[in-house]
Length: 100
Image 1 (tube, rainbow, N blue to C red):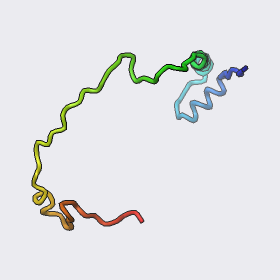
Image 2 (image 1 turned 120 degrees about the vertical axis):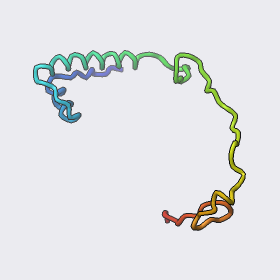
Image 3 (image 1 turned 135 degrees about the horizontal axis):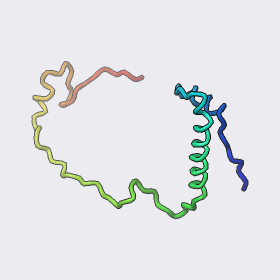
Image 4 (image 1 turned 180 degrees about the vertical axis):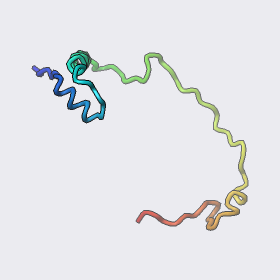
């Protein structure tokens, strides 16, 4: 399958800069276009890599999350918690319905 390679020119860089609200001097646009084209070529190389059978990962190092035990260290007095509530029902705060 043949894919036409997209290349950026100074005019396209000027348009992108305008859309991104970035001020790029006219004399820098051609050089920036070359740099962006190199980046796009590199991304195209990445698209050629066969990743079938490769599991997604979040890091190059195998890690597991450290977890602590979920221990209740405070509580056990629901009556005190809702004591000042304007409308409490079964130890919960009641609020008006906002979605129909």
